[in-house]
Length: 183
Image (cartoon, rainbow, N blue to C red; front, side, top):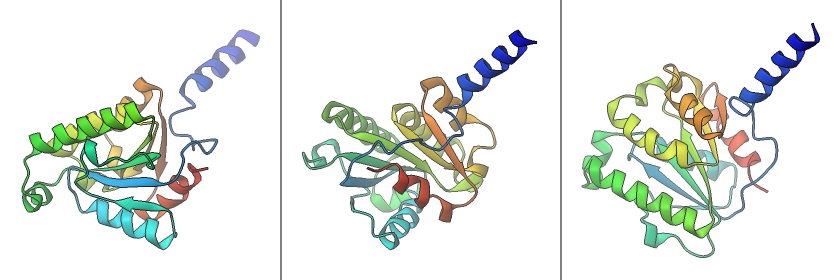
């Protein structure tokens, strides 16, 4: 009986980082909010953070060179939109290159990276998944609207990389765990 209890406890502890709220604030301000995939979800997150009077700046197309020494955390709003990419005048390949360079530079600078997928099931698909695969494993923390991960891709990427994943029921619930991640 004791072995079973220990086994169950070990299994629980091995998966507890995923689907748990970030237990301590780890990120510093100011934060930079950007889009990865150019979906309209970026604007929704921007509005939520503005209403919460959160200290951040936005640049949906920020490149690696746009990160400054004052920046401490990079928030990636992940969701591919062919319409958004077209409006920005860029291809998915160019957006992926920008994303990878931005993440690399953020890591070199010691920035924390938080990835958000808030578009739900409607913002998933082949295009978004390219950006999900680039952003999630490179992040320190991931927040996802639950129905946006019905296939378990985001959870699997987070679990494989040992990243805490917070699932929320709807986009309006994103700001609480996001803001709680900051010192």
